[in-house]
Image: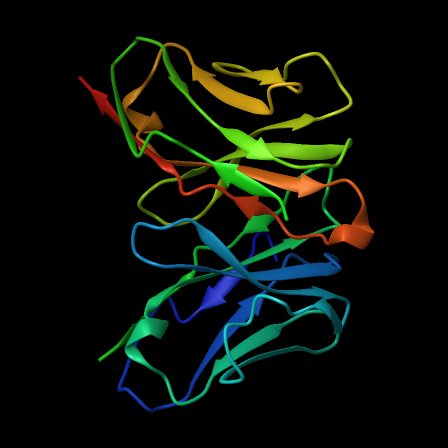
Length: 115
Length: 117
């Protein structure tokens, strides 16, 4: 696609429910990243994929968070048993190779609200 | 671990004037990349400018330029002839040039820029 697409744009869920957030990267981008942005805060790294494998998942805050990527393309971030502190904007980015020289292309994020 | 600090939570500038946003970082690495990203209310992060640490020349993109001081670990963004569309949150970010140290961007906390007409 022309850009990084994330869905849904907004999600309201009840505490304790599971949610799935989807990221569709730019076609051909091998690297994919998930970040979390809490209200008024900077971006917190969650996980990095190269192809379908995740060499760096050091930012996942707890075992309630998991992510997968299939076909070297679409990625899903799953949060189980959501808590109010999970409320944030979840941003996805993709890049050619490792993206170092040219930065990453970000999606518009999913705003998750846990009530 | 690398850290990025943006000491100005908010800045204001009059339309057509110039403003400088500050960023400092901490690293023991000799080669790395630095970025400024803009985040408007639409939430999408937009790359404004990038700098490669081994290049001494400061990067410039139209009205945006940086003052990169490697020894001081400082990377400020200057916006000239400010426009209303420049109003946004601006993030400074660092990335190691060595993939074995990770590919992630490390972000500062951001600076909200307000542009007055």
